[in-house]
Image (tube, rainbow, N blue to C red; front, side):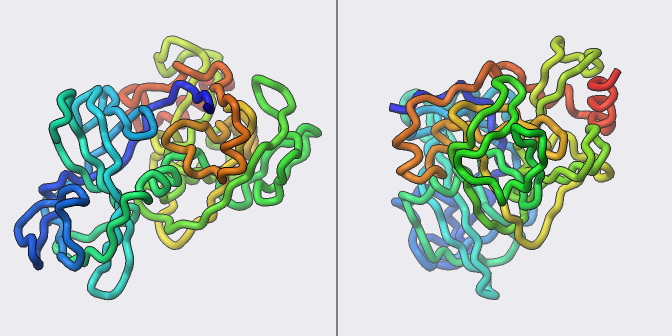
Length: 333
């Protein structure tokens, strides 16, 4: 069996079940529930007062996640089951995918049901339930939780040359921070709507001493070495999620259209160099494993984090508009 690394918290934007209610159909007036109690063709509407919340989870066993400390919703330590994937259709025929998450207590009783939309939902619009898939939830969540680069990102090779990620092939040698030169085990690719938690983050050239813009998935973690602990983290080595650097100036959300994402896998979780910024490669855990083709996952015997555990920065330390500039100064002087 594949041995996986200790995993960081993953944050997802969700709505509570009572915010997504059947407005027409057999279950009229009922809030979102688990797959067994939902009926196709019922029409759901998101309440005008509904506000998304950040649900933070750790990877558990393959059957469930665990609510992390500091999550905006959910009881820390409670199990989160991936119940099903939904296909919703708006009146104009637009299709939106979503995942139903069920939080349960130690006795197995349901605490809360959450909706995780994979694209933006508008309030007070009827969404027809046209698909319920119990086996697709893990796969869809996996694409959300992977660390991903966008097309055109230049990766530093073993020779020092810069190569676009879409041109990398299995077996090529890439420079890593902790383990020197490592061979690429797998390169994944997917195209998704750039909206919600799929909208990439653009880090403008120069923001973190990078020569070119770096565009990555929101929860992609960047490695920062502080020469001086300006952030107050109590250590010099940090892992910071791209979403926490957004300041609507030098770091922005690129919402709209489509985006080509790429995953880069090595034998162990690595810090590599993308546009000159130290950034993580794909980390295998129970959330991300479904992204891998079977012929790749069956060959993995272990996937450790290469000494990166415990480097994540708490969100409270990053809740300031000048955090990107602060980290740039911390890493240079």
